[in-house]
Image 1 (cartoon, helix red, strand yellow):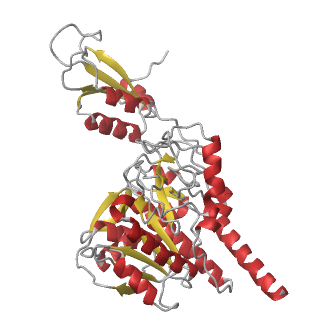
Image 2 (cartoon, one colour):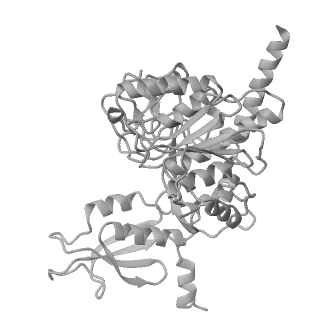
Image 3 (cartoon, one colour):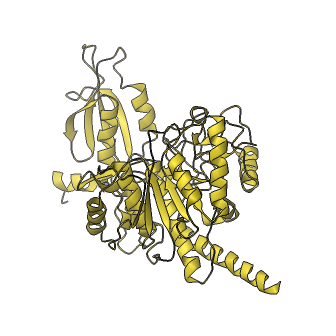
Length: 468
């Protein structure tokens, strides 16, 4: 019989690199260190000495939900037996599941690129969300932020990732000279998903009591031709910090923008569940965007990002609209997942939809390429897709836009990929709408289904107008 060599066996047992990376990060997060590498699939790790000589409970709890990684507790590496009573920390063997061989003849998953351990590119997002044929110059979009960005960073981002060259064309307010991370993220990804759409930068004056004032005043004074029809904002504050009077005024202004055909898109926030939702995401007149990812190893099922801020609004200024009532009722009546003891189903619930928000590659700070995570990444992606749908409407000869998008999105819930895993420390993702992933996320067909639904609705309005 011909036996396998050590190298051949290690090759057979070799785990997915993402498993190894996740295991090392998990150990480091809980104060441990890798003492030894055993073969290709095992790490011997040590934690600071404790009375029971076991790894931290928090480490074991997170390990239990980490796919492809398991631990064999407290043994002596030299004798491979339970340790004696020596006053040293017990060591833990962390092993990674061997990677399953890929089927060279199997179908290629367009969303597999979301698992890239080196970060998620805009090209991946376009492929994963079925945007390869989406490009429009017959629409308009804006990102609203309290940072500056550099044209050179946007240009390098587009060049590095093979995107068409597209500068920001209009500027409102001051333009700080810094290459801020958030502003660069907003600019690069609203134009990555809203490809070809003329884009406006709006600066928020953080020195004012209400930093949104200059944005809302400008929007109120802008002509219909000047006013971009999609606005992306990735900032906010807890409802009780904003105050009832400010929220009331902002709700009125944002409702007025919606009546003018504008879609306003806010990031829901990255604080997990909170009793006070972030405003403006909590406004009944905007679309709030949460985040999803595929776990610490980046190769599990798509699931709600545990940091996504979601739940029911606390202020009486932020009531649920009729368009959300059925989704909330279904959640309240049918959910079996974890949720706070007391909820008020008459209140606005966020988020509305979700997009991938983990390790998103960005160019900022004068040429630096790094990865950013959170709903601030998901928000401009969704905004750009809405702008692209507006472009499709214009290209088809329809003189209309999505406007306030939520009634349309909730009427087309089946277009979304439902997320049923994940927890934001207050709510669990469940079948149907939930206050952590919203209606769900984008599959490879969601964008095209929404686009066709918008075109069909516009066509029906034209036919009805002719009939009358």
